[in-house]
Length: 234
Image 1: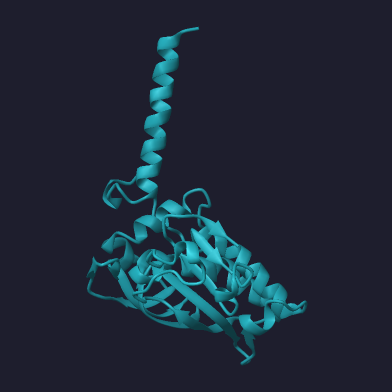
Image 2: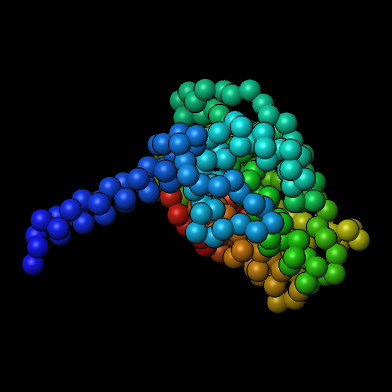
């Protein structure tokens, strides 16, 4: 066996994994990334997490997203992180994926994840189950300078809401005025419940953490989505 070759291959593998981790965690500026920009109507599943990470860091990419038809909003000034709270590269969002969704401060990467979810999951599911689109969603939380709630193990750690890196969604309104409320419908067996379960599962590729009412009592009435450093879909 050629051990010199084995060592070279091992070094190459470690370097590749290191580059992967660096890009994923945003340690390399987006301007040096070889990735293409997100195509909201047809995302590349293997690339989308990296692309959203870059979108969350890069002002030019964020402005490009705002020029699309999928996110309506306006860039807001950064508030440097202090004591674990603040935001960078965020927008004031009013609509996403064809639905009204007012959110005063939300990171561009999270906004991009919401757009991908709405375009590729929520609106198709609404047509499938109800024959009409979602025109509004109930926003139950974006930026909030606070710690994680509902889990004593993590209670001393800042929530992703503290850096405008999370959103909570509590209900959906269809074009005919019908309301689909997570608190009421999640545990049911009808179309509303099937719709909610399908769109929750469909959110997982676009957010690193996606929590439903199944997670704990603190999430009994909403979906929580964030793009923090960890992975969880439950």
